[in-house]
Image 1 (cartoon, rainbow, N blue to C red):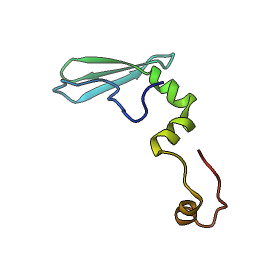
Image 2: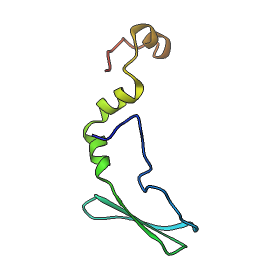
Image 3: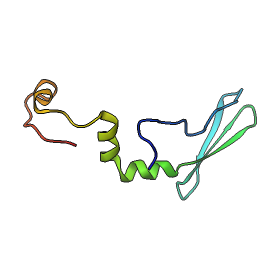
Image 4: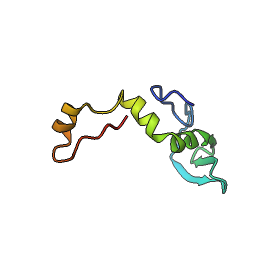
Length: 86
């Protein structure tokens, strides 16, 4: 699993000098390609998105530092019964 508290730029550092003019995803959904006016094509592996899809709840709880306490729930979600979310 990637480190959810240290997000990263999917494309890494960019040296683009022109606007992005084309974007495509491969049929298998695993690669993102983007082309720009500067004639540079970036190829990005979207594998990390599978991890996000498959572990969304756990990653959200980790990033948030846990779920809401009962008092916080009453303050931020009034009118709904308390539910432990993480």
